[in-house]
Image 1 (cartoon, rainbow, N blue to C red):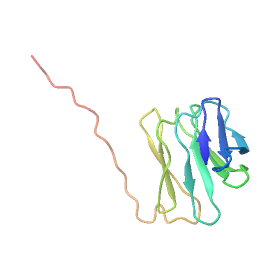
Image 2: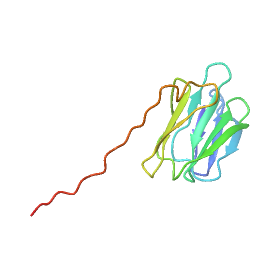
Image 3: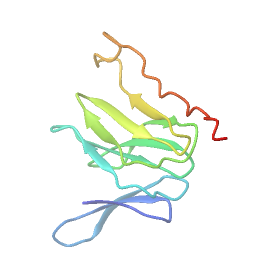
Image 4: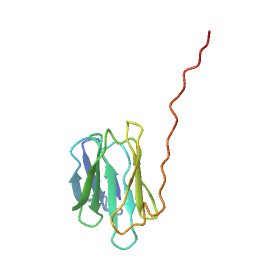
Length: 121
């Protein structure tokens, strides 16, 4: 069981005994729940209030990688077809993938139109 805490740590707890197996220091408050990725060699992905996204080994807590976002992470990570989607407080949605993924093979861009001011006179 993996628990993100406001003390900035990601905890791995034994489900049966609730004993701490390992902890990962995320540096700042972890406000969003972690996501477990993979089936064989699992990893745990978490985002922090400092805008860092971390991937750790699910068995040991060792960090695989990290990525800095523009602002505070405000969504839990979601994984679709080996791509991690995560949002930050600036309104951006990020798609994080490794070199083995197929991201960008047929990519396009998506823009949200800015709200238009209307004359209300």
